[in-house]
Length: 166
Image (cartoon, rainbow, N blue to C red):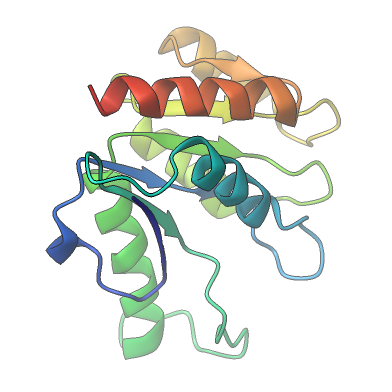
């Protein structure tokens, strides 16, 4: 069955057959909530069955407080960042979305971190994203699939997850 985990909820204990980490633009108030849209698509594509266990990791934290000091000394901030790093490392697939209405510097950082995890990343970077050229070059260099729009990207994500479950 597909099960959603939101930061900082523990997920490793479920021993998933496949794990999807939803990397990408979150900037509250600026970014569209693409995570819920992709989660709905994945949940529909992988309905509850006895044969699979899919973990969907969504870092969009419902109790996020933008006033938290962004410091390793802040336990709530550190918990969030470490949860995200654990998810990136432990995921079998990492769909990554760059919202053109955002800067998304953490997503750029995550792209750099994950570029070396061969086969995990599927990137959607629509025209208009302020650093699209950088994203294009990194994706081309490391042979990361790059999509310009949500629909073909989400279809590719479903296909990649399906391969992970075999």
